[in-house]
Length: 128
Image (cartoon, rainbow, N blue to C red; front, side, top):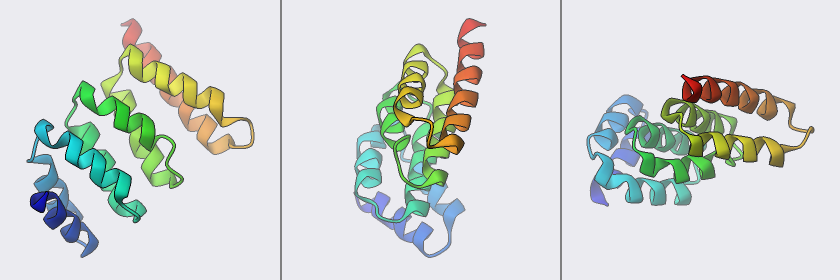
């Protein structure tokens, strides 16, 4: 976990790009450790970076973490999760998005609008 921690220290010291590349270069085998780092991180900016790295790896194994991140209280994090679910565009990501929409309720208009847009994007890409 040393490499991940070193990269997280980089992002916390303002070197987001270097941290992104360091984490991304760890590749798909690091997904479980990246997911654990996401779950334990307090800083929304760092969670945002972790979620971006996770979906940029473009692995179906990342969908579960993206579903979790969709429930993150920080808008920059759940929007990053939406980007990932749209990029991966598969029946499972569509199911996750529809469940998030159904769970959200009308009080969260901003979230609902973003999720509806993502559902539309994913639906269009799956049907192609």
